[in-house]
Image (cartoon, rainbow, N blue to C red; front, side, top):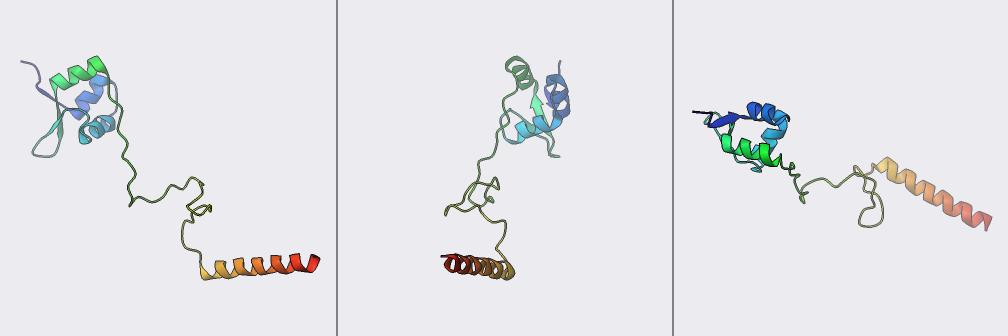
Length: 111
């Protein structure tokens, strides 16, 4: 009688992929698998045969949630300004005010 279940390492070797990929697919329930009382994943031999025949499914990516931090890709925020990594310090706010005051004074002086 053949093996009824394979470990994630055995499945990874048979499919030519990484252990991490197989574990991720098991954890996300994309492939049929069960856990042992010790918490190890076991993949049925029928599932391994299906994966050999059909190929590995793509690894799902989690959807962003409201509690996730905003993307830091330089895109503009809600008011048209890039989002700050943190609140500006009082020193930075005062310096920005001084620059604004200097610019206004320079414009009115040259006008």
